[in-house]
Image 1: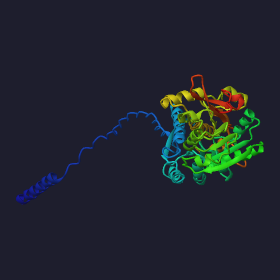
Image 2: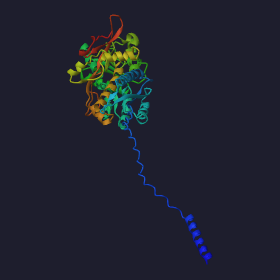
Image 3: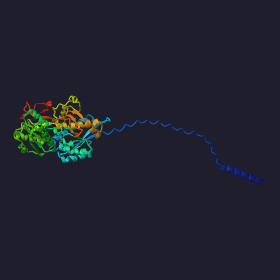
Image 4: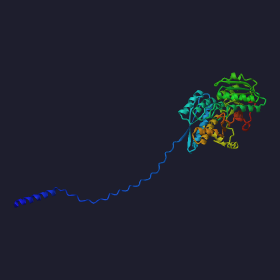
Length: 446
């Protein structure tokens, strides 16, 4: 019995021990930790606003063709010399000021038109479409300018005709073509007025001219004007461009002609004058287009003496800021003597001709119009050109805004004559109009 009781107790003890060994004690409760405080972020530095990237420099592209070769290279080269001088000076002064206060630099883009009309339209189309010209300056001569004008108008581009005097370009309904020169219709009218003053009895005039657009326009107008003043046009002949032998035309001039007028451009005009002298022409008065005002005209020798020529401008011309004020006009650009000095300095002593001055003035008037418009905007610049009424060293500039839109109505011609000085050398003098002359005209011419 005892043995049984002890057996049962032993079993219970063993079972208790086994259960104690197998039971997993509960972990002691851990104290609740406060959440770790988040370290404060260092304050970020306030970035200075980034400076705006500098605006791209503004450029105004002026496109033109230049007769660097061919029959018009003398006049054409002088025109672009003046134009390039103006561009250089405008840029040196900071550029063209626009309405937003920014300055735009001028950039020239040009090609040699070889003095050929057939090249002009192709090259102006290229200037507009490929070179993206903002504004255009015409080639020298009325024929080349007329060919370019239609391209400018068709493409909505403003063109300043720097070296073209034909009236007819401005009878075609164009609205974007503006003429710097005194029109052809008034080119030789002063030559008749001067002749009438020098020799009231002179009545017989021979008109011998180049058969190009400009020269024909001038001569047609001169013929009509002369007839209206009582002159008798005793010969009216045209010669082809490139003519070098003028004997057939000189032989058609009556021996008793009082005066010979006409000509065309530098090459033909200087040759014509030289051959008139060599063949002993008896006329007492010779007035020719384009060639006589050129400094190189003196190189024909004794045939230059006494010859008269209409000029768009001469260094002796006295246009001043005071004269502008008296006329109620704004004065723009450099003084005449300043232009002459800077031109001679840039081109190794070369004296500027009216072609040089016309090229400079075309750039100057365009600059003034863009600044007045305040933008490179065709319609705004057109409106500024329409309202132009200013004076520069080149003289007054004003454009017709009615029937013959863009025709020059402000500028007038001066007339020069090659006169022998005390030193025995011939030099140019302004002889007409009377209020602007630097010497008295000589009649007879020799």
